[in-house]
Length: 497
Image (cartoon, rainbow, N blue to C red; front, side, top):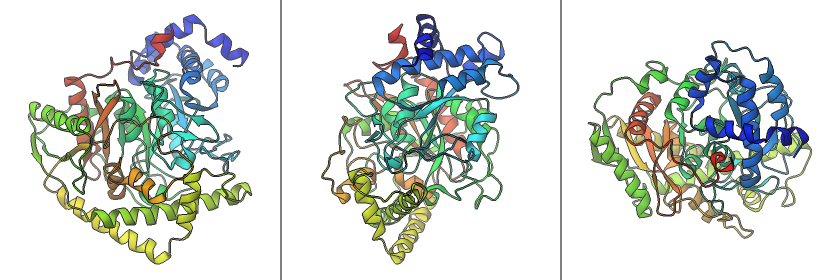
């Protein structure tokens, strides 16, 4: 710990951090505008909290606290939605000019961004002040957050369990009360899965809702979307209002919202027709607590006046799984190849973890014909899901097939690539998330439930393409009906004062 951080992590700052953990980013913004707290105080409190909590959870991989404090010193509070609000950026996706992006990999270690990505520039314009970067599995290619470069990130609800991935560092930081909001992204569930495991709200936006330029046309071939994990629905809505919209030259443009997203939170709701699906697309049964969470969420929707029916989209499941492996592994291999070009290193078991190495080797063997055949299967899935949503406004499913896994789960040396994909995208653990990355539809994990062991269990809510508004509106109603903000994990800043 540096001398600066020793001075920051004093009792008064930790007390302030604990007080601020009772509000969200929108609430903190209001306090800053009213001059009840200065941006530097908010940033200093977050820096102190991060220092203490990171020693318990290992969610931070780069530290920008001193730079953030300088930025906050003479901060000009204007019309920004989040003036001077502390923030962290995942070490994958959004790039910060002059900052290293290791992506959790020894192969990528030391790569420095030449400029801000468009999303990062919008984060800055929204007023957010970045105190550091958060940990991710190697290249984001896992749903646990463990890597050989930065180590293992723990879940603040129980340090023996995973916070999920690949945005596990971000989710752990927000859930522990270090700061109210953090950047995350989602290629096969990487916003929603850690939100579920850490008891947060996590929205994956519609494809191309969030800019991916200037260097990438569509992240992960269009499957990936970026945004944040938050403790409140309104934080996500206000941030989405601030950053959405295509950047110049974007290959596609998402349908424009009907109204500002924040207005959806108080807009009188229409009666929704909601489908409830409690098994996987192949009919596999999740653990009872996960199915129960989905069913109880549906019952809450009925109590709010909506119509719920048991119904599920029919998709060619085995073909989908095959196509996911073909296209995702090929894209992953290309990413590893381009990283090697940038660093001058040769991909090998010496600088890639076992599952990454296995995925890279498998991806290098995918033929161009199989890749395009996989894209064709995607088209069939997209049309089938699209037809389903001509009937229903929303779909509710379990987020996962089971509760958060213990640390080290599926991180061993002898890994079968097919077994890994069954866990990553199939019935073994996460069959619900990836389908909606392929279709590009918005989807969210909402933190309404806990299991008997005190671990969060998220529920998955999926909307029509382009319709984040309905998800946000219903989620806000559910949040009011069953508030979750007062729940505190074992590792939380309030326990350190």
